[in-house]
Image 1 (cartoon, rainbow, N blue to C red):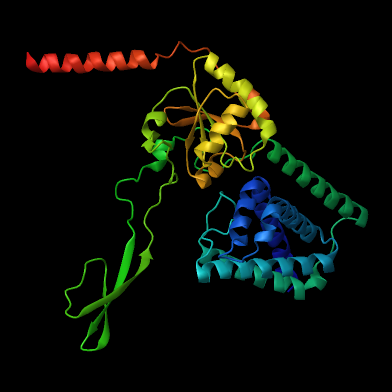
Image 2 (cartoon, rainbow, N blue to C red; image 1 turned 30 degrees about the horizontal axis):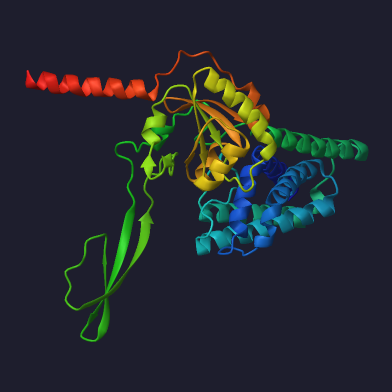
Length: 393
């Protein structure tokens, strides 16, 4: 028992530190996940939504500290009860998500490692067993170092966690695990490779035959069955391949501009996913750098999920020199953890991405003047005329 407890003490401690650090690297992303849990159709705790970021910070810092305290053997009774209660709470959440299919990703490891709801639940079951062994074998958890040294190490871990959290909140995640990291190409991320697994569905068709319900199961085709059709229930047997980038589009006034902008060179994009909660103080930097970008002949656009009325109002109030296009809010939240944020695209590849605090650090070069829209139209007309002339000849 002594050696089992000794091994689990180190293993669980390191596990909690790594899990907490990954979420501490992106507390804004973890707060989005908490909001999913607080939604009316999940836990119905909407009153907690405004405090999601504060709760996220508390949970991840506490998770890191518990890992450190377990390894050091600090405040053993308090630490073990905290570990036990935390893992029981997370086990309940993951079971609820898996059984009722409410939240498809628990966010246990942020974007670094995606787990299905049932994988998350069984992971928590294994951890619960380990922590129970530690709880009942607590007499074998002997402290390392002196009491003063342990206290100093725990305090240092607490201070370092808060400092790191403040840094990533004022800038961007230190490590970007998302599909929109610098160097990623959005168009390539949307592609489905040849031979990728396709989803498999099962269809249960219900017919009324001779006064009785009869269920026929197929994998898609409508069954050849006499009787009155009542209804059909569909279930997914196997998930198909889902590309890393999905639900990405750029639209305006019913027109789709996705391909046009993803093929553009030297495109500066300002992202403000929700103008109701955007940080207005950030637009001073945004205006200054976008004015410079336009002066240097960059093409500049904005992306938001807010209504055209709100985006036009923002453009007018902040005297911005670009127009906004529509994009899905969840997608924009995934692209950059800043509202507003700014990035540079070159033929769909993200070359720079910055928090509004760092917007003035966007590296811009002097570009040759872009052709005006009138020149482009004249060139297109000339090309069309030449094609017709060549065909006649």
